[in-house]
Amino acid sequence: MAKNIKQNPKLFWKYVNQKSKTRESIPELNDDTKVATTDQEKTELLNEFFISTFTKEKVENIPEAKKRNFKSVLDNINIKGEDICKRLKNLNPNKSMGPDGIHPRILK
Image 1 (cartoon, rainbow, N blue to C red):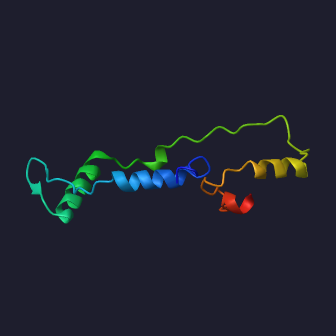
Image 2: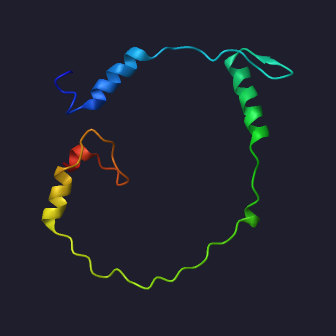
């Protein structure tokens, strides 16, 4: 693992996180009226708190965005195959996939 730390840092951090995790439960929660001891009671108490904290916004009061006029048009784009190959070779295979859903290991 120590030899591959530069090439695959995720493996190192996976090992570190496995060794450093402590499995503790959420302690008792209480508000002014009750104490929650079970997971179900804690969930309900937290839910009540978040419901009382956040408000539901009225969608009819949202302002509309101003329309913008763009003066220039992007109509001539030159993409070279060498540029694409260069970018693909520089992908980090240890990163997660992008919005296209394709993993960098496959693209590289």
